[in-house]
Amino acid sequence: MMEYTATELMACVASRTLEDGRSVLVGTGLPIVAATLAQRLHAPNLLIIFEAGGIGPKIPTIPISVGDSRTFHRAIMAASMDYVMSCAQLGLVDYAFLGAAQIDPYGNLNTTVIGPHDSPLVRLPGSGGGNDAGSLCWRTIILMIQDRRRFVEKLDFLTTPGYLTGRGAREGAGLPWGTGPYRVITQLGVMGFDEVSKRMKLLSIHPGTTLEDIIENTGFELIIPEEVPVTEPPRIEELRLLREVIDPAGIVIG
Image 1 (cartoon, rainbow, N blue to C red):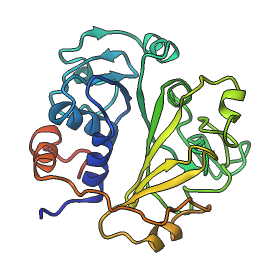
Image 2: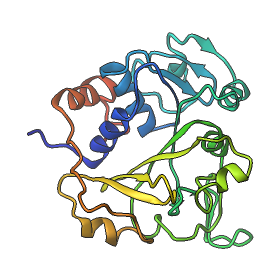
Image 3: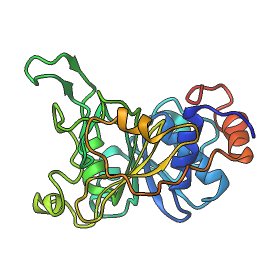
Image 4: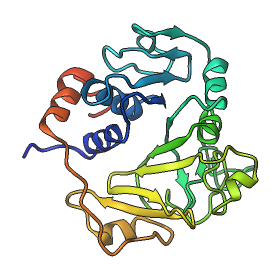
């Protein structure tokens, strides 16, 4: 078996969640890598959408940002940010990738401040298009490092709504029915959300990780089934594409 890094594993797992013929709104970094891997391997008709306006590109090599000219390479449309967000508002975007500084049990995200809002310990980038994406796209996939500082019972600030306080709360706040967080992919495992309570639920553990690792790095009670499968490790072809074609300079995957 080939050796791989946690970042490569996260990229492969995220890639496998994307289906052929679907659309995905991607951000800078690992989401671009994951979407490009899916497009080159098992989802050739995946419609990649960039916040800056590139729609349907065939990514040549890894762009350094969502506004990089390569995000328009062989695209079907060079649109604008407000057009992209209007597509999400119309229900035309299946998946969105988001990251966060904090996540709570219901998949709510904080990318604004750590500490009090008026005198924060850390001021973060803010929402950008994160609120729009998390509110309007059908399924949100969250990529982030898992530890107790980030997986918290209560956010310091709510930037992007997940399931808010549980089942029905999201729709009660006026957000589209049937949308919301779908997967949380970390360096330790893959989480989803319980259909009834809408709390985060462990779906798989990455190779070499234990349940104790998951629990020690989660600051709230995670739903853990009796049997938790082990995440499939990266396949040889996935690693080859990542290292030789998609990100040969190691800009994202290291």
